[in-house]
Length: 256
Image (cartoon, rainbow, N blue to C red; front, side, top):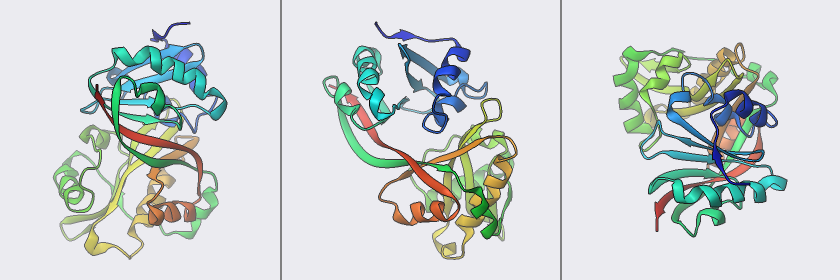
């Protein structure tokens, strides 16, 4: 069964909803807000997404352990069609499927986490106010000083799901989303940071708690990705009610 492009959102949603936490990013990208920036590929019941909203594009390929071999077969068929440069988020074991065509650099271990115990949010005082397009210059400044190299698309502010804390005229803490889709009932937190001069005050926990409070009115699953070796962040999210649900690796791919 060869790989083929898939354009049927309902069919994709049906497949991805079998594990909405593992596939939260992909489900969110079915939303009208993200859909124009996506290309989807299917082989049987396995799905891979190439997201064009970043430069270079990002390949998302996730599977539960029993399905890794089937998804690897999809990637083997897909590899000759992929761009010469891209990022990839891959479930463990899938990197080998792309290795004959690409040099894979990085391979940093990451965890997917999901909000499974929202009652813990009540133990953290929410802080921050919603941010919008007018806050973009201050947000760029904060990311340059506190989170250089993060992936942030200014369009994300249009979701209305960014919360920030100010000190004077400057933003000193922020929590936002990479994905938010009321239609598919999923959200993925992202671009969470605190200015170095303001750390240690609980602001990160406060803005994440505030954002989760907003998101839970519109989605069933609140998720996030975090580097496995970022112990402080993992502990923070666990304190707020998140638990690890899957491991994956992030790679930079360059065609051989």
